[in-house]
Amino acid sequence: MLIKIARPSDCQASEITPESLYLSRRAVLGASLAGIAAGALPGMALGAEPSRYADAAPGAAPGWFTDKLGTARWQAITVKDEPITPFKDATHYNNFYEFGTDKGDPAANAGSLKTEPWSLVVDGEVAKPGRYALEDFVKPYQLEERIYRLRCVEAWSMVIPWLGFSLAEVLKQVEPTSKARYLRFETLQDPKSMPGQRSSFALIDWPYVEGLRLDEAMNPLAILAVGMYGRELPNQNGAPLRLIVPWKYGFKSIKSIVRISLVAERPTTTWESLAPTEYGFYANVNPTVDHPRWTQARERRLPSGLFSPNVRDTLMFNGYADEVASLYSGLDLRKNY
Ligand code: MTE
Image (cartoon, rainbow, N blue to C red):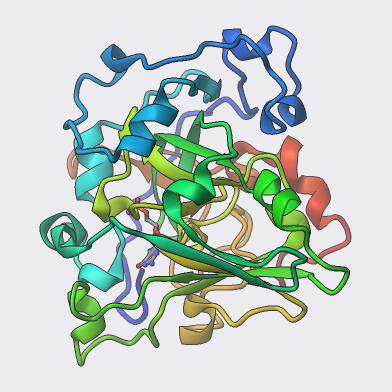
């Protein structure tokens, strides 16, 4: 993320890309999106398909993850006609400021993050608050592969095959009270393992915090991810648990989550508090509302070479308008960027 240094915008006219969310052939067999998110698709493609991600470096998955992979629903949602980003790019071009500000820093430094054991607190305005060991937290939920576009506010994008489960299902379990209007997410704070949190140059007031409106969090597209490319999340991508909200700029997809709080007031989020005129709370991908210092009309789809940039038009809500536009009816998206 950029605060003060202008980024050269080398965008050009781009190809037109398919707009709508695409359910894979298997998923289309009798499924609505809501049905998928509710885990209502018996007999869909279950079990691992390792050959599809031959380029993915093998991980060292914990036992609970390997067990869950055995019953995963593959390609529950995918993107039509847009190739998946190579694993190497998705894992070596990262934003994870806890491990440094250069794109290569997270891959170089995140090995120090200890993801086992990991515990997660769910608290605030819920009938059933709790502190969970991660393996207990994930137990009730169906693991699904969701192949989504990821669009960073910096105007680059990727297509990533996440493995995760519906955030709406989690909310149903913890039972938000009538006062709950927002979710507040918090990343681990551990300066010992996170060099960025030790740096005296860091602008961020740690821990990294993000938020969603409750109705946004209930949208079937919103997931908590524990894996990608058929394996557990690499540390640099937010292991062991991160948020994925594909219609929003990537900075909403908070990594290495340790706390989810249901709250009555809109939480103050990291980038909004650092530069409120540049990064808003909503952060919906919107090609018609430019960042003050660069256009958001186009994006570089990675990998993208200096001499042959892979540039394409940015889609409203990152191509997920059919699924999410109704969340914002009546809201001025120029003011609520
Ligand atoms: N979460 C935390 N805790 N710290 C971060 O610096 N960066 C965000 C988001 N989540 C960030 C974070 C930004 S700006 C983006 S674009 C995405 O993570 C990048 O995800 P990726 O590195 O997996 O592509």
